[in-house]
Image 1: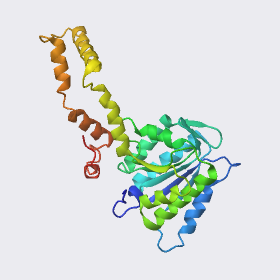
Image 2: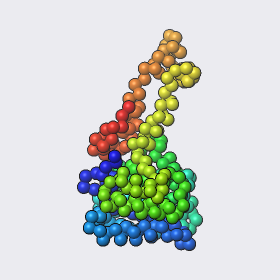
Image 3: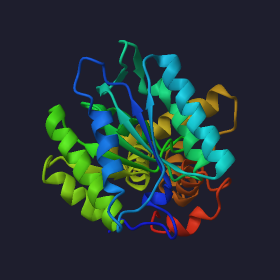
Image 4: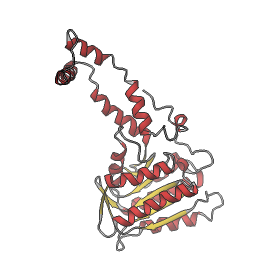
Length: 284
């Protein structure tokens, strides 16, 4: 079960920021969602959480709004759940006026927001095919996480069904505070709706990194040859029986050392040491 953090909304968030870049002549899903969440506030059992919809037309608008959200988060110690409504694909977002913003260009802004929330940024992605694009931003294990939790449909979804799924998600989450229940409710409208945590992204990245540490066979032979060639190029002395000694050294590598180095960098533990308890299950 994905549980809420003590005294805060989902994954630490205590405000909802909707980035609205749906073209004016398309279904205004962001506005519909804003109205839906505002209507929920009349129910006494619903979490009362600040909600802002930010209209974005161009790439400079988007960058400015994301920077403003980060500044507000730092100044007021408020952690945003960032909800993005736009057209998108595996490469990036297409904004209301036609600007195309690549995920790589957004990464620094998401990272700033993630730092502002002490590595608790929660992004809901309501962009066609955008889930996999932003997910790819998380997967490498050799950089700091740009966000902590990603939610949305994992496949291209018609606008009407996506809107229903999002309304179901927020209705359940604001009433119960339970992310598992919220996802189950969303899946009643869109079965591919899911959550993707940074912890899963880290382990996927680590699996890729392990490919650099051959265990045997041809890969081990090639890595040994590569190391010996580098030593010769650098005019370093070679041990007796260099191939056997190099292979033995590779086999005896302590993988916990690079694992911990990746882990500290990815989760920014030097900046936020309190996260150690939250990610204690992420281990070799």
